[in-house]
Amino acid sequence: MIVNLNFGRTLMRCTAIMVAGSSWVCASITTAQPDWMAWVEWHRLYEQDEWHKILYYESTRGGVRSQADDPAFFLAREGATQPKSELIASIEHFLAEPSGSDNPVHCRFPRRYDWLKSQLPRTLTWPDVECPELSAFIEQAAPKGMTLVYPASYLNNPASMFGHTFIRVDAEEEGGQRNDLLALTVSYGADVKPNENGFVYAFKGLTGLYPGSVRSHPYYLQVQNYNELESRDIWEYPLHLTADQTETFIKAAWELKDINFHYAYLLKNCSYRLLSVLEAAFPELDLVSEYDAYAVPIDTLRTLERADLLDEPHYRPAIASRIAYLRHRVPTPGNKLARRLVDDGVSDARQQALTDYSQDQQGNVIDLAYEYSRFKAKRDEGDLAEVSYDLLRLRSRYPSGELKIEPEDWPAEPLAGHGIRRIGLGGGVWRDRPYGLLSFRPVYHDRYDRQAGFLKHSQINALNSEWRLVDGSDSPFGIKLDRFDLVDFSSLVPYNPMTPAMAWTGRLGWQRSSPADAQLPFGASLGLGRSRQLTENSTVFLMAAFEASSRPEFSYGIQAGWLASLGDDKRLGVELRSTDSLLTDDSRLRVDATYNHPLSRNQAIRTRIGYHRDDDTEGWNTRLQYLRYF
Image 1 (tube, rainbow, N blue to C red):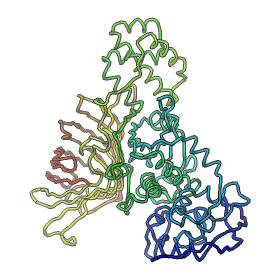
Image 2: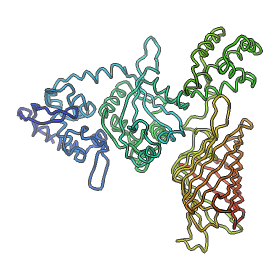
Image 3: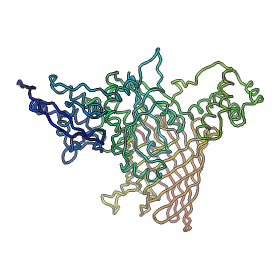
């Protein structure tokens, strides 16, 4: 069928349009409305997936609604819920000669402008518009490709406990070299007020009450923040994209400049938004449809890996990782000498002490001392500028060489880790009475899971539940909820004098004290202490323990344990927790031995034998579970 398009008719219309969210202008719109409108209706452009992805529409019970929460993102009054109205308004405004604005809609929304031009008849006449701000940004970025950047988990910040992701725009090489630190980045995050209360921060972040926005920073600032200040390892994954595709992504991200979206830690977070912007740039990709419930940063990596967009990663070690690497390359006395070079200064006697080592080891000792001085300086532990200068001057006497950790010494990359979601099926015996066991954990990782790909010595569990099936129970279908964790975290990083860290555990949720407990009280627990490395693959920890519950009950005591890796990611541990009540004479003792045997990356068998004692109940609890990660 041939559609006869007649572009001879002209309609002059005075249309009020919002420019930069603040001023109104009257534009002369030249259009052959019946003709391009017929084209729009014939091809039903407003129903196409590409248009919906560019405007971030998602399905609702009554139709669709854009995830953008800002009226400035739309050109039609009802554009947030009416894709057709928004498309028609966009065409009308894009066909108009801009008047009275330094930032016309063509420059504010370059991605949808390019897409509409590619979809509408070539005989349409589009105005010649210059966009100096956008052009300057693209010229500064000089896009040649893109890299997905993944800073690892950071337990001290609720928004970063599952890691983070953002895009680095890689520039053209100059003189055969490329300085990645000067590259621009595109990231999405919550707009948080300075000095926001921690509890308010966590509550608003979990419930999606923060606005979020896209921002751009030089990469060196991101490295300073994540690599140095927060001491987080960074993984850089080049994307299989061309220079033209990278420019398309920049235009899609540009449309979100100063536009608000709801931000939530477990769904509409940096990971989800990054994938949605990639979809807006490349609508042929299906990246976000599987994340109706929640998404965390590692999901971004796995989704892009399935789409065959990721290249081999590059590892940028955190300052604490560099110190740990050098500490293992230097004998124990050399570690102490490196600390003295920083804490007491570069004296003649300490320079003489360096001669006890080989030339290579002398360089390593000085490198270790310099990294240690930077670690202390980043934490405002005194003015170390003079010490750092003396160390650099001392280092210049030795063969130069940038500290480089070879790939064979890298930790396992994030994609090598198990799936973050886990279900468990099994059973157990409590005081000679058998029971079935069902568990589900939406996120993320515990200290007995395979360690590869995750932050070592850490546990980050959220919304974990355990259900017990017992014959003769008065509960529906014989099922009892034994445990539900809102959060269950721990950091058992071994203490060392150069990068001192406190070992801690924290939990908030409901839990029976033993299978015989008829109550399911809500409670909170905290452990504070130290962890020590016994051997290369084992650690011990000892903590002061505190508990509070809705019984009501307040308790204190000790928490201790031994954890070991047995090769091939097998994990074995023994843990003890003993507490006494502040309000009564009650006391509790819990001792558990746990062994986790991986069958594959995403399968494991876990067994636990425990002795539990309350004032009125005691017994042995043995359980065996098959765990499946996905």
